[in-house]
Amino acid sequence: MAIIFNPVLVTLFVVASTILLHISDARSVRREALAGDWEPITSITEEVTEIGKFAVDEHNKVAKTTLEFQKVIKGENQVIEGINYRLVIEAKDGDSTHNYLAEVWDKPDKSKSLTSFKQLLEAVRRGALAGDWEPITNITEEVTEIGKFAVDEHNKKAKTTLEFQKVIIKGKSQVVEGINYQLVIEAKDGDSTHNYLAEVWDKPDKSKKKMAIKFNPILGTLFVAAATVLLRVSDAQGGRKGAIVGGWNPITNLTDPEVVEIGKFAVVEHNKKAKTKLEFQEITKGESQVVAGINYRLVISARDGDSPHSYLAEVWDKPWEKFRNLTSFVECSLENGEQQCMLT
Image (cartoon, rainbow, N blue to C red; front, side, top):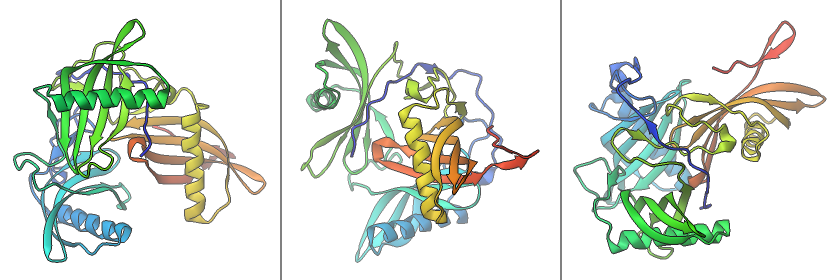
């Protein structure tokens, strides 16, 4: 797993002016919710069961296993250009029955994509949805060790000389195939002291005990509270200092290497699926969306033989999981003899 380091732009306050989402009850989502929030599924409907079966089937194809779907135990969903489902599924592996945490994206065009499928530890707390982030209330030796590890790993990767100071009492942990830690760390960079947001995966097999998956310098004061949304967005992705999670935002730097890489990926993936030979040229405009990674919506210029054309591509990027998925790639429509690509 690649270690990812991006600047963090935080301190977005969600106040009483909640965005109203008019979502059908069939989707089991509250009518007043922040776009992109995970919402509890209160009823295991046929649709939810179908999503669970799909998750098991897709996992079997990829992992070459023979799990048999049993039922969906509980779940959450997330509304954003379709619906993301996060489900705890009971499935049979031979004679043994286990629980699995699956994430499935049910897209507006009715196609589905399995984005995550993990077996849950038997010791996962029964009172909450497995995989939830829980507040860390006590900075134990183990938590401090995790913090030191995060700083050390960041120093190796970024060739910096940060000195660990302490874990501030602002942290979360997540139980699923080990423990994910999300910590606010104070570290010294020369004579200056700064706060950093780190995420570390402490794996159960202990062979590679820990892996730093994110380490971000925090700009300004980080307030960890029930109404705070953390947006980890790099300046290269448009420098959005205050965007609602789930909203599409313009990308102001279209030549940033990361954005260009996303565009090239979109063309390559489309060529594989459509058996075409498009050649990436440039990105002419774009938007990005923050939710469980970043969704990119890009207008790409590509050459098909001797003719350049414009294409509208959507790519979902979860860099800390090395996951990238092309979700849409269409040629822009012709209007008055010119190609027009409409972004929202």
